[in-house]
Each structure stands twice: as C-alpha cells, then as structure tokens.
Image (cartoon, rainbow, N blue to C red):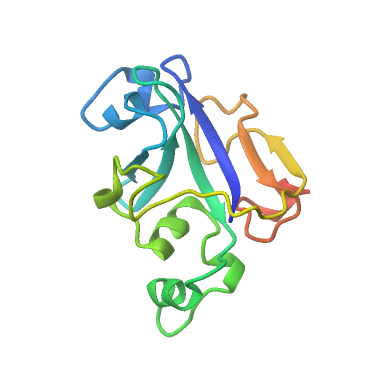
Length: 164
C-alpha cells in the first residue's frame, strides 16, 4: 500500500527532471500518463515514479514508501545484508529501499502501470489521514508542499522528528 509520495510537475519545477527540457533520460515524463518513469539516482538507487499528466506535459509522482502487504519474504531476501533483514515497515521505507525490495530496475521504465508486471491498483483499502509538507531529499524546489504521507504510518520515510 502506498503510504508516501512526492509530486514533480513540469519544466518550471526546478526539482523535476523536466526542468532542463526533454532528454533521452526523462522522455517517459513527457509520455502517456499511467506509465512508469524509473531512473538511477546518484548511481546508487533506482527510483520509481508514476507519470500523471497528458502526453507532452511532464509530471510524475515519486513513490517514496509502501506498507508491504504480500511478498514480504521475497522483499526480506532482497534487503538482507550480512544475515540481517530490516523490520517489515522498513522494507519499503524510502524510495531506494522500495525499489530494491520490489526488484525494480531500469527494465521497468516506461511500463504501463495498469497492465504490466509493475502495477498500481486500487484494492479498496482504508484511506488514512493524509499529511502534506515540503519535498525532502532535494536541494531545489523544497518550498513546494508536494509531499504527501499517511499520517503517523511507520513506513513513511524521513526523520521521525520531521513527521511529528
């Protein structure tokens, strides 16, 4: 279950990959909505986004954290380091941990999120209270309150002090 996201909207958003215009790397942002935009961040972690606007209008939502509902043993196997696995709510806490736990890589870039091996679906789960605040983990565009999270959820990333 998605419990934290951040929005990145258009070429006038300095933190959006579209701020520098259309490139080979960010082309999925300009593509059809409902598709994945996956990229390698700082050469370390893959991050997954859902493209949200009409073709030609670059915007996406970064999936920052999930509450694992199934496949927990597989996720633990992918995240175990020197025999130690993270706690269940830490498996997908943070966008890099999330993609590692789910096995997401550049192979999932541009996939249709409604009809491929990588999907976002409505399972009719209870919607919690949602908090809103500035985006984190970026240096520009931090003034925009485009980060959304399930209030008080233990899988939400960022420091615990920030979430209070």
